[in-house]
Image (tube, rainbow, N blue to C red):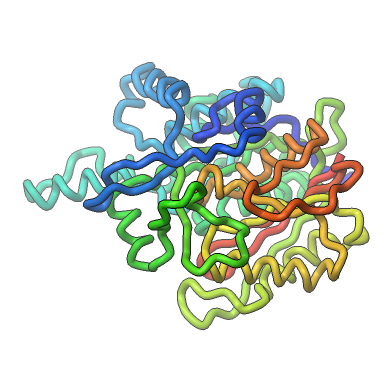
Length: 384
């Protein structure tokens, strides 16, 4: 049986927009998407959905009385899933699996329900079902009227790429031949921001580029949160309508010194990248879309891991978090989208404040990295 996996569509909603043309246009400029909003008792930089995307989510919320009580994570996932299966040509007659996860889950609703409980001593009737992690994929399945397996999970910031790993495993097992995978995150809430500030990793920079993702010389942490969702359609075999192919997968964990630590040379990333590259020479990789969240340790350790694996001849390196922030569980799939767009347009999108890198003649193979708290790394090799 062929082990080739085709990505037949990808869809997202984020501060960059909600259609591939707009998203690509926004990637080609050097403007970031951060704006100030009053969160966690002070003005805070975050990356919110654009107005058009917010309108799509509001229309979806009002379209069905059952949808009015759903968290943004669920609505985001439903919106992008509708578009993804439409672009892939899937219908209700197709049997496909769904695995969409989230790092934080229904943060907005949970905080509102808990605040109301503190004030009144009573919980709302729908407080529990609308804040469970499992309702992301189950509502998407309901909305798409699908009949395949549905899974929701949380593996912190590598959630979306772990969903892709799950989809690949199901497809290669022969149990199903189509899978919808991705992640959704709506973390722009007081308590979530407060938690990131407690870790001392949130940006307080007033510079032109407040998130210095992939700046290896920065002297302070500069992570900023963003919201959004992204999913892709996976199909078994080499399909004519494929945007790209999953040519390699890698995953690893590492022993931690403390809850959010990562080793000096990101051992987990070294292992996951080597696993993803086991069938090719590393020199064939043209671009790496790094996880690079904008923290001092996170960016530097990932870069050192890349040096260990690739030696002195590095691929072109980039990240999108300087522009849209860290979307936690959705970030890996948004990085996949950037990778696919660069392959489609044969144009490298770099980080504007990083030294220009030696260009590759073509962009044929892109490695996408993601890692979460707990040292859970995933690397996906895409090719055309």
